Length: 500
Image (cartoon, rainbow, N blue to C red; front, top):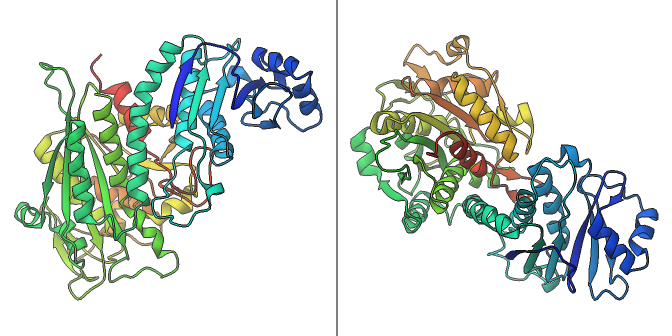
């Protein structure tokens, strides 16, 4: 998808999008086009239910003698309350409409709107971002797709004041979106393609972006003592791996402790001996979503050369039932020395993260750790799908920073409690703890479990179970992998950890 920026002007071919606000009030460029087609746009508005609400689209095919293939009027609602995310979603919806329409070129004419809280260059960039993000398709395995269903739109021009400033903003944003697309790719791939060994190889390729990558295989993990993580993968034919990505972007001489992102990478989760129901199990290819987010975020930071030191560490395992698989009732000794009774082998992600968190804080001494995981079905019961990820922390500064980053990017978060009272639910007489606390407060007891492996390092846990995979189309994604979390982490770094 080629996206460029140009000075304000009247496009002469292809599809053209102009703007309206609340009350179906046409903005100047829309009024000029309306005049050129003898009021055809006004008549179309009057003959429809178009009110200029945010994201509304009105379309006219072959408008008059303009030379245009189609004219699109898009509503922005009240400009005073317009946000960057609103623009992305509105134009993401436009991309969904045009992507396979047969249209090859789209021009968007952005007018300066009085009272709008987003500057013209920023508005132009976020319009382009919304269009680009929604253009993503994972179609590499479609061999018989009809031509009329294939993407046709190839070129986008955004006309705006200060196109150079918009171009610069979008240049940075596009690098983050490349990380988001990598996350979508990884989560979309079937488990016979992305398994622990091939996932590790894909991560190794990120050295081309400037990341330092270290891969730890099973022999090394056994020597280190990551037996909680290894227990999860011992039923699989694939070796488990841990991948460590380092981005050292802070200016020399600052000697800053790194920030750390930790991701659960269960490339397929059958539940192990505690086997999941067969219906819907095919979705469990995305149980590596936390790792996918971390990998995409690390690529984004490297591509845009973030001025911060960041560690990404992911545990790559496959949870399979076999004669060598971990059993309910087994007791494992984690890297921290704490022992864990396995009550349910389907509560496996916390075992992976337990060893990763301890290893990360012990080896890298990070200023803070943020872990991300598709950890609990209870999260879907709490928030449903595609609305909020739940997060847990007892550090108020981290909590505030994460919430603000989620609010700005639209990767929404909602804080849930940590409390010592929940620790009793994972007590067991045979070991230091058990790996599941029962049906009640499932997401909270999982977070309490993880907290035991953070060793006083400032930390937050984000449960993304309802966010990484969509069951229906959205304005910024098609059904499938959403890419949630990449821009959240990137903004979290940009706003709080980069040297100015």
